[in-house]
Image 1 (tube, rainbow, N blue to C red):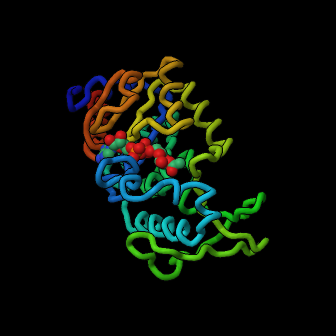
Image 2: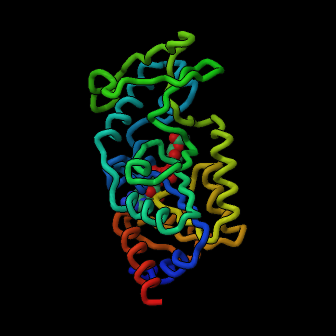
Length: 261
Ligand code: OAD
């Protein structure tokens, strides 16, 4: 384990002009939003991804899939950003050349003050219809009755423009990532000095390429995760711990270092 407070990581951050913060579900874990692959609490330990997170699943049982995503949307709406999200917003404020790239479909980066986070896997808050045009759907702020705790069935609404079913605005397994988002993320990764990878298992491609592209282009990759991941070997520094503790300590140390020269 690397030292905490993380002096080397703090120095790398202090000296960086261009930073990419690449986040996964672990950044939101301490806000009470479940991760995907953690053994007991992860969504994929409790739910079958093939029945919920593919286009085939939606067409087979739209009410089941829509209900499950409504349950997740409700959980996120009840959650608050944690000190890890806020530390990332502080990095952006201190280093203007910072790009936040997230695999998360929640809005906690935005609510913590991050501007223009790139969402590689879409958003729970951007439903659209299944027609090729993908008309955006504007849901009511309250979204009707609260979904059941385990994500019971709810029929999806119909598109006001074309009558097609409305689907969650997330990227499902087997679907392409939004092209503009992926291109912007790859360009930022290829040009950054430091990539901070926070709370991701690094297992899902093409998103998992992002830290590898940064490392391959000469950036220092700093990882924050309580567990080892396949990204360990591309990292200059591995900070083993929870994002809500490690990130504020990293930011504090970076600007402490700056003050002390
Ligand atoms: P995973 O659930 O695969 O991994 C979460 C990571 O967060 C793990 O490495 C945990 O060790 C780590 N973690 C847990 N608690 C943490 C904490 N408090 N602080 C920091 N790290 C913590 O989630 P992702 O890597 O985001 O895609 O998953 C990638 C994609 O797979 C998701 O975007 C989603 C999923 O299937 C789609 O739905 C397309």
